Image (cartoon, rainbow, N blue to C red; front, side, top):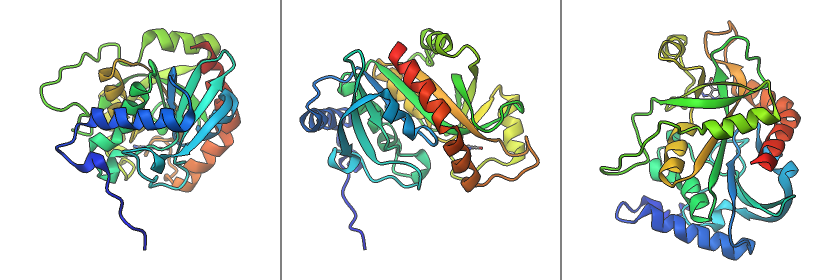
Length: 277
Ligand code: 8IG
């Protein structure tokens, strides 16, 4: 029987930014790296990209860092990796995503992003596996996130905190990514709570609202990144067509398989984009 560990973020009276600062200082201690310049969250299908980014300086189990918890889903890695890029910058690779559907609250969902900001990162690269609404996006297609629809009815911001999201998914960074891979398409990411996939009617709703990608992770993290003053770059790997777009039913196994198959191509893409940031 596993023991339940107390997470300091679960104390409502605690300041989540103080805990992120604590996490960043522990990360400095354990990695020996004073400042991380860029941070990446690697979602389903993207995990292998870390190996191509540069030289791993430290690979720290997320459970060693205040505020993090063990991953809930098979296929999601639970570590924070410090990587030295070829040009001497340092990347923080977060392989420990907490999803909103885990019901641990939004503070825990965005803790990794806040930790990255506290560690010095000025650019946050958010990646995920997601469903595609455009029917020419075959499984294995990476796309840029141009904007989002947050359908979680939640926000990482607390109190009267008004943050401008006009250029949330930085036009500058998207342009830069297209400089690396001209054929990159882009679309509006729709975050649902999950963990169930959508019904075909919900996918049609998302489409009518202007959405092109359906997922369960990135919108809340992007908002927190912007609040922390970071520039955001978002990538979705389309691992399946959204429900009802294709006649085939969705299976988590197929989603994982599509991610695996696309891994070499998207890892190489991401490594080249990060080198160009
Ligand atoms: I991978 O079709 C993956 N994640 N909401 N819908 C939602 N999330 C997803 C999907 C999908 N595929």
